[in-house]
Image (tube, one colour):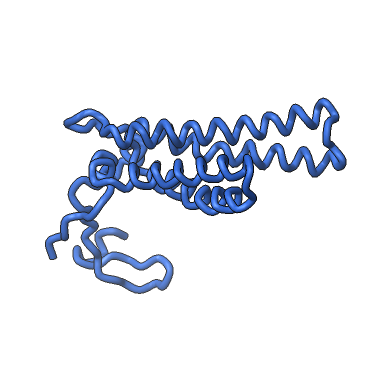
Length: 178
């Protein structure tokens, strides 16, 4: 069947007609190898300090959230403050699941993986309003809220810095030749 079509045309399986063949050219630096997206970058210089700081801060956020989830499970298993067992278990599992995102993002930032910037930014954008709401309650909540909000803002500054952007291989791409 291949030989029945002119070289510039190929069959269109869904319609039954022919369509012009398109040359599939990928931009420079784009690979068809799926494993290359997950491979750590090998930068010419060491990891920028801001990216290292962001990775550590995001990891600390993940550990704190995981600790809260574990604490909720311990309270459930010991029977303290468990009015509704199903609700308590659901809350603990949800908090533990939420800890996965910052921990994965921190690992990706540490290993200079391109995909990690998005989850890190999303976690911080969720943390800023949480910190703000906590700070509105005053007292001990004020200190916790300010800490959360300032940490989130610091991570955003670090992750979105030009050095971090370059190290992760994220940023404006060069225009393709037409």
